[in-house]
Image (tube, rainbow, N blue to C red; front, top):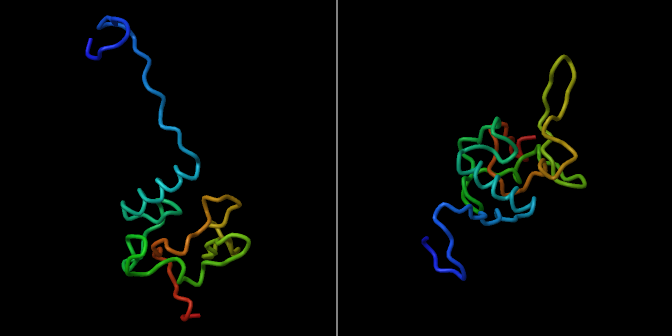
Amino acid sequence: MTEIGLFEVPDDAYVVPPLPEQSTASERRKRLIQTRIARGEHPLGKSIRLHDQAARVRGGEGLKCGDCVYRVMRRWPKCLIPLEAGGRVTYPRETGSESSDVRAWWPACAGFKARDEE
C-alpha cells in the first residue's frame, strides 16, 4: 500500500483508475492543430505540406493562409485550392465541417498563392 486512506487497501486489490481528461471537441481540435504545425504539417491534414517560407508559430514571420488567394470568406473561411481530375475541377479542402475552416494565422501550404499575384 502506497497511500494512506480511510481503509487499508491490499497491494493486489483492483483500484479504479482516474477518469480521463474531459475536453470539448474544440479543445481537442486546437491540440491537433498545434501538434500538426509542430510536426511541419498543415493544420488541414497530414498529407498537405507546409510552404518553405511559412510561419511556424502563431504571430510569427512568414507566409500565412490569411494572405493566400485561395482562402475565401463565405459563411466560414475555406480553402478553395482547385484540383483538376478527369476534366473536372473540384475543391477537396472545402467540406461542410468546422475541421475545414481555415484560420488566417495558419502557416501557408505548398500551394500558397499571394493575393497580389492574381
